[in-house]
Each structure stands twice: as C-alpha cells, then as structure tokens.
Image (cartoon, rainbow, N blue to C red; front, side, top):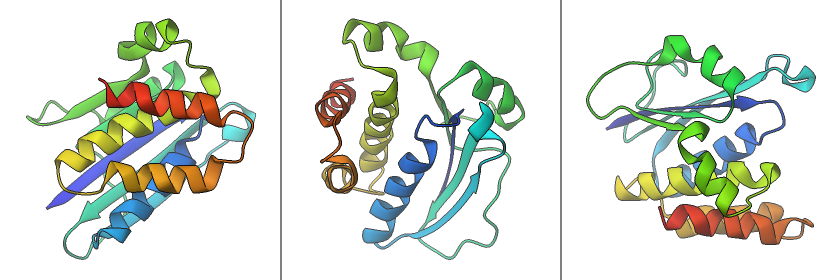
Length: 163
C-alpha cells in the first residue's frame, strides 16, 4: 500500500499543521511516512504545499506528481496544483469550493477551516486503516487545546465527522 496525499492552501491556512498531524498519526500506527513541505513565499500570500506519502514499506523518494488525495483550500492553491491532477479511478479531490455552503451555514471561521479538512482527511484515512481519527484529534488537542479559538476548532472537527 502506498498512499500519496497533497495538501495545498494559502500560507497561514494551516497546511503544515495538518500534514504534521497526519504524519504523526500514521507513524504511530506503524506506517512508513514521507513528508516534504513546500513553503515557497507563503509568508507573502503564496501557496503552501505538503507532499505526504504513507506506506507499509520504505518510501524511496518523497515527491510525486499525481496524488491519490488532493486537498485544495484556496483559489491560488487550485491554480498551483493544476498539474498534479489526474483522472485515475479512486482519485479524490477535497476542494474548499465543494464545502463553502456547509462551512458558511455552520459559521466555521476561516482560521478553523483547516481543522474541518483535517477531520475529512482523518475520516477517509481511518476508513483505509491508515490512522485513527481519535488519535488525530488527540494530537490536535495537544497542539491547539489551550488556544483561544479551540471551541471553533472542535466545532469544525465535529462538522467534518458528520459529512
């Protein structure tokens, strides 16, 4: 099994936080993990990328061009990842455009949208036996539980569980 995930969004949207938690949860389950962040100029409004591979055997090279799962959290990220898209069976795109209505209805603030997407990914990866959602949530709570917007983050996580 080799699963390739590409997370993309604007700098400051929490792409690297998401990738860190996914990687840590998969490692705790005993998988081999490769993580290659791409920060670019996200401090100046650029795109932040995280290339993740999760496997039950050693991983030879960390970068790839065609992910199995692509997360797109902004228009700019959608443009930047256009060459990473493919039409293979089983290919999954989680695009913020597909969830905007739900996010707006639930009043999920922008700074918690990454937690919503983390919840969606965790749910999907748990279904594939790669990690446990509760473990990801525990890592998340350990990292952000004392932050002022923890209630909004928990709400965003809960919303993802119900989709």
